[in-house]
Amino acid sequence: MKRRDVVQALLTPTDPAPADPPQVRVASGAVRAMGLEMDRIAGDARDAAALRERIEAGTTVLDLPTELVDPSFVSDRLARAEDADFRRLVESMGESGQQVPILVRPHPGAPGRYQIAYGHRRRDAAAELGRPVRAIVRTLSDAELVIAQGKENSERRNLSFIERALFAADLQRRGFDRATLHGALGVQSAEMTRLLAVAAAVPLDLVRRIGPAPRAGRLRWLTLARELDQPGVAESLADLLAQPDVRKLPSDRRFALVIDALRARQPPEAGKTQILTDFDGVPIVRIDRSDDAVRVTCFERNAPGFADLLLRDVVQVVSRYLSGHR
Image (tube, rainbow, N blue to C red; front, side):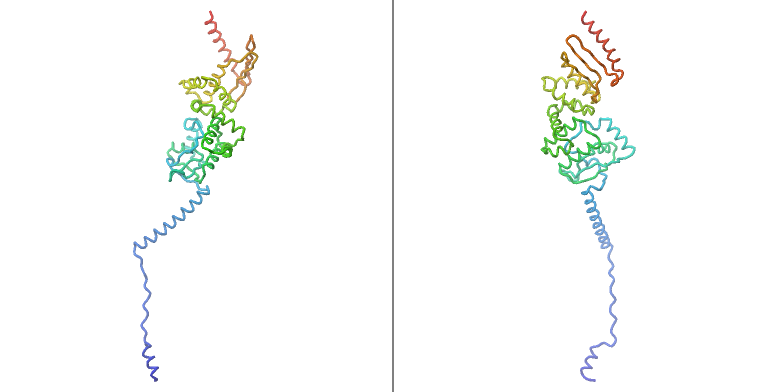
């Protein structure tokens, strides 16, 4: 054998030892638990990101604690928890649950809280019932919030004229432009001018004493606004509305008393016709006054039984008149 082959034989083992088997690493309990926790955190992060995307798109309805949900920065109603509609809403939600979610945005000035665009009554009803409120959470600018607020009010339950007037005035006072006001209230320039004129002419304290008066329309509020230019009118009306028996009356009836008081201050002039109407503008009585007579015409078809009531009162009034002139 050549020397080279001998050396090669010496270097090559004739019975090689078997290779060590691969070692199986067994994780300790702490390491395994950490891995599971990391997987859970990653899953929660994915779920949170997906939820955030759905919230921003306005497609997710959440149950929010009512104590975390604040009202809009602009008020749009004069009466909320005290009126009959709200009581019916509480009863309905108590029996059937909340069918329609409210719209909120993340509160711009309070992290972790929300601010209502629309649905104040549903939030208040849920709070009274001790339940969370179902809500759609959407990122909204101030302008988007008030437009959504006004649009939902006009579509679901119309505000009264004076509530719309105060809403418009509040938006204007906060610096919103006319385009935003028109979008929030869904009116054109002429009607917006009337709304703002009434809000400026009628003192807020007097409006609150009267209430929303849902059946009193634009013409009556414009009439009241004009009459308030006269000295002492606002004060006398405030005194009238402060009377305990008047305060207990429904809002529309309080407004009717205000209009009656204004008419009493200005008796019809000779040759002038005055027509008294109900809350919806339907004529009830026509008064024609001349130099020597006053003719009263009752519209029986519009107000059945009113003439009989008037005649009974006339008898009493004549008796009082005669007693004072003996």
